[in-house]
Length: 405
Image (cartoon, rainbow, N blue to C red; front, side, top):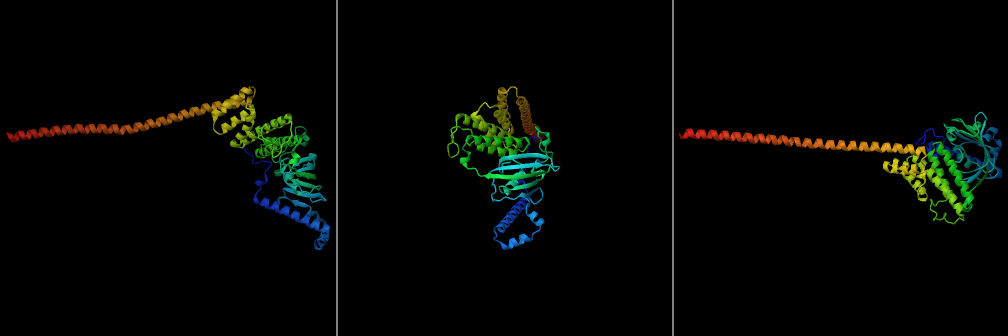
């Protein structure tokens, strides 16, 4: 799949939900909070009426309190299996630690992770889990039923290492999730080279995952997140890190720079896929500023110029990339296509000029023809005038002769 995001996309941002879904999700979250507040009041003995009501509830009612239809349409349902003893929930961007197991409807386990660390809202897990984790307290265990729309969609998930873990297309998944910890990371937590390298690499690899699924917008967001951890100096070694200096060796700086340039190259390719050519040009220029002979960056810039209508400029860049990588068949094939395209454009341009010139000549001939006809008619009139004049003179002479004699 080559260009734009597929309508069968398995991962959708919350902005794609309709207003009704958003309202339902908000109402469900507020209802869940109200229930938890009532439960807290009962535990503290601060509300005798609520406590009395709680004592008269049936087992079905109690179980219903632990179930949350997050979107109100049955596509994402959370059920508490084990309540937490604390009231601490993660916020977007927090680093959380999870244990989770994912099963198909037939009970086959297809995903299992222990002490798995992700940043909330960074697309590092399926969207269904990314939406539910902020509704959990630390220590809570929950069952989450996820519709394919918020899991792996119509593509499913292929596991080359272990085919038993393949997730078929349009599969509903049921997860058991245990939220172990959540932490907000400030700047001091990110000053170490190892942390920046780890986070940046993790975001880049996850972005590659979404890119390979043709989820280009999601990939772009994760590539940008990777750049935040690989520093924000945009490839300029003379700039400083954020507000404070980070003590890094030359090898560490070079390592981060190399990773950053790879991310910029990948980001440019994802931006090309959605025809964001101006943004892609900025991304690829970061690479060429540090590595003018980076063949991948030259190739991508050629693709960008082609997208912007500059075929000759694109040919020049692809020729340079082909010289640097003479064995790269993709570059060679695209270069050949561009040369053919340039010749076709030149031929069409000549035909257009010839057509324009032909129309101009016809117009000129058309304008000359009435003028020529007018000249001929004028000459005829003059000749007729001369003849009539001669005849009149002859008649007058004869009349005078007769009159005189």
